Amino acid sequence: MATINFGKTVSLKQAAKLVGTVKNNRFMLQGEPGIGKSSLMGALAAMYPDYHLAYIDVPNMDLGDICMPVIDHETKTTKYYPNARFGMHTGKPVIIMLDEFSKGSPPVINMLHPLLESHNPRLGDIPLHPESIVFMTGNLSTDGVGDNTKAHTLSRQTRIVVRKPNCEEWTEWAIGHGINPIIIAAAREFAADWFASYLDYPEGLPKDAVVFNPKMPTTAYVAGRPLERASNIVDHRDKFDTDSLIAALSGTIGEKASRDLETYIAFADQLPTWESIIKSPATTSIPEGAGACALVAFNAIAKVDKDSMTPFMEYIERFASEWQACFCINMAKSPRQKIAFGNKAFSDWVAKNEDLL
Image 1 (cartoon, rainbow, N blue to C red):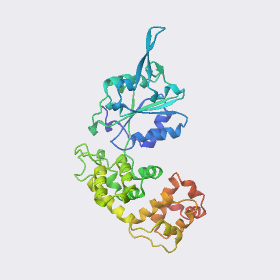
Image 2: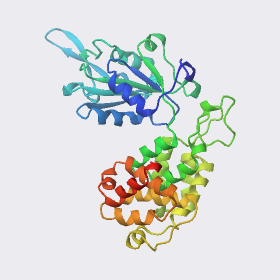
Image 3: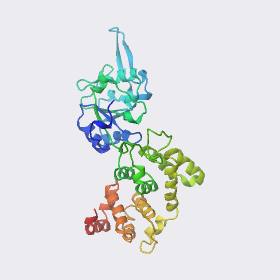
Image 4: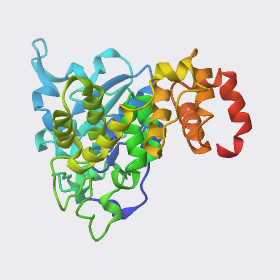
């Protein structure tokens, strides 16, 4: 099975562009566990909003979940009809994501195999819409998580290694997907540890590494998927005690990362309230320390609206230029950018600080 050694890696955005553009190829996207390969379905859906989306969890599929024989009593023959989850009955082009394809059972992979053809692809006896997109995901052989693909399948795939997102890329995604600002701010502080990759350490990761390490398997580590689940826990932290919070986070991202995150949770609970910032932007206290300042910036991106944008700009302009830029740059990239660019105070800041952008 191919590994990282055969060529360059691509980002998640680059992978989505390739898959969505070269529709006749069947891309196999390989990458470390939990880095966001499955999120590509959302990116492709944005590119093709009229397509039917079919997420197929291949390892959990049985033959009957894919196609079933149907008897034609007039001709005394049978045909294989695909399951409705594939959307082929809708008449629309479909985006079919064969998630963890290389972990599927051989009979299931064999039944899905006709979808991999560049010409006249089909599922069962039903042809695929010619504008449809089919792609697969899997892990690297070096991950050691049971991926295996036979040669006749390899020849039908365009295999690409998808690298882990860096902190900036992940932050852009996190802001657009409602990740708790505490998680985002902590990720910025611990980026070197949280976004490390074992592939960058040929002789092995440090023993205290918090990310996925195939040489030292663990039940919890930091990656995009666990951080999303950690965000769910932090969102509800006011409902349970500190011991429960740390236990839940440790079981999600590991003990070391959860202790680091605990510091940021403490920062968050000591910051000025949003109401006080908006009511008195010129006099409300400014927090000390990089962690607290980062929290203010990312919390504002999640909360600011048309009415509060101007007073918050007055408040953030009292901060060091680094934190002004942190807020403005990330706000400009977020799904709420219209609020920013429709605000005079924000536009004035951009005009005065072009060198920071």
